[in-house]
Image 1 (cartoon, one colour):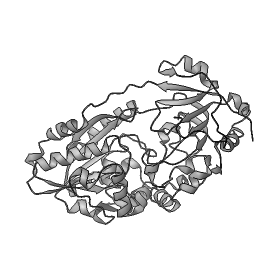
Image 2 (tube, rainbow, N blue to C red):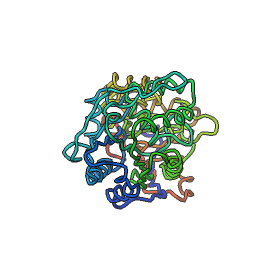
Image 3 (cartoon, rainbow, N blue to C red):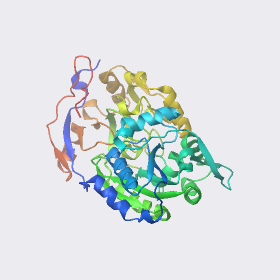
Image 4 (spheres, rainbow, N blue to C red):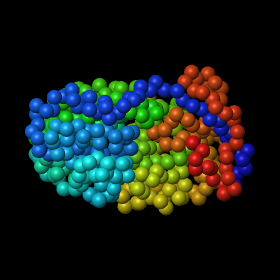
Length: 424
């Protein structure tokens, strides 16, 4: 086993991002929904399906609960619909459990949760594929579409992940998500978005959208209520903000990226491909894409992902415990439905952090291990503090958004050759 001197020394830095933040999230939800004049479009006693997805959205429970209370104040009868394609193992029970783990429960929200994988086909597109929509939401008098707006981990365009994706893939449930991900092989994401979304908006009684944008510290930066006819232009504008405010690695060239945890609450692909520079190819950055990361090493899964280890296949190395803790059936189902089969493939696995890193360091070229450009992060959602190898020290000292917190010191392997669980 390599000695401590065979590994790079690391120092901790804190990144300082431009990070607007909402101080009173529930009040902003009510203020935004109040701007739409919904009382003129609804009648007391009508039902409203409120969508909740599988992402780890900051203040999700507060946002949902505030929206429910606003609708109840109009005399409406809201209920919550888990809207997440094939996540949660592709079962109604699994999807309900996911949102309850985020604090979205019947007791807290003050309204029912109705979870089902059943859909209706609202129409067929000219290209021949059916448009699926959650049956319970379709049967409701209205639907409130709630989702975070952010860059997608695979698709590229002026609309990526947000309200319209929730209309198609989230509310399409497992069958709809599978159809759209297959159709993307023959039609562009933009073509599907623009054609299918229009049909869903015309046929499915969408009351409004509630778009959420987060800052680089995983905090709620903006909430905007959107009328159905404004979904497309407002989502484009919100996506620009999300790109500007998202967290990034501080350096563009990385030999080894060590990540403590991946999971569906972190990103749809377990780790955000926008952050690690692998949006177009699982194992390398394409021309013009940054950062350029040679090797990715994974240590574990988040508890909130419930064993879904999708994204594992984007890494080259991992701890064996991650493979043991994965629900491979759920992982493979998610990868198949998303038509990202390689995301569920297994990297080379090792029992200890020391063995995993030693293997990775032996594959990055002629650079001596002590001079390797290594970054160690908690996950791709939390990048405010991270460990950097000594090779970055001079660059970090000249970086105007980095604060150096410690001098370089050896990696803190314990007697079992593992790194601490709570170091970051």
